[in-house]
Image 1 (cartoon, rainbow, N blue to C red):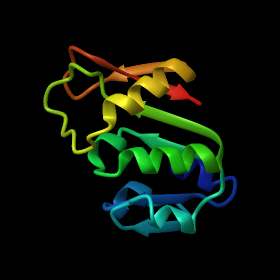
Image 2: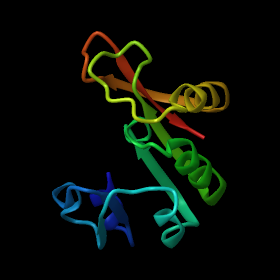
Image 3: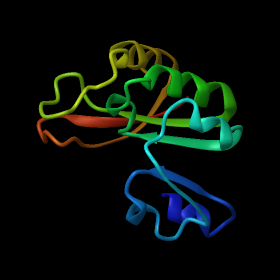
Image 4: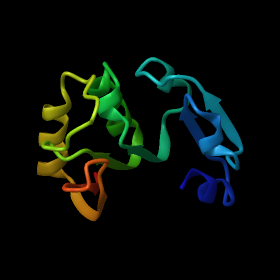
Length: 122
């Protein structure tokens, strides 16, 4: 997705694995947290795709992106999905906000294929 956006203008990919963003015009390879996002926000569109549950400060990241993006897309694991690292203590609270205020767009298989992950727009 970031590569497609980079074809139309500037796109920033933030991940610890730079190979995920080979075509992005601006690549940051670091473990993202709420503090480092200040460099890149505000933004027109922010994609938080299956990342928040991996982040100890996931609620801060979510709130900062929500406050500073015109459009926010969020994908979260299904609550019953096995094998998902849940480092974010607030992932259930984030899920509650996303489910109550977001618009479900599409579902994809999770790592545990018995459950699907929903892509939400906020």
